[in-house]
Image (cartoon, rainbow, N blue to C red):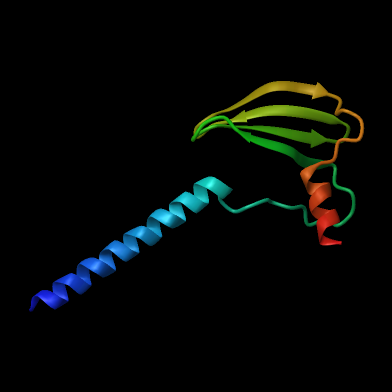
Length: 104
């Protein structure tokens, strides 16, 4: 084999590794799988109000169930209920409701 083949191989390897790195960054930055929506088109009883990343492995999730909200800390290997059973502030719009309005 001549040097031209080796250069093309190294160039292709660098290109593939760069694509893997870009994909990894996109998944970490925008989240894996995107939003999970309800299949029920009517008013759902449960929804994610807000997500806030704490660090690379943990995030705070504010979940609405009926007329109660729950603050949950999700980690790679554990979950922790931080606060539960408080009422949402007036006029708060959930991500699921905002998503449905965007589709309309």
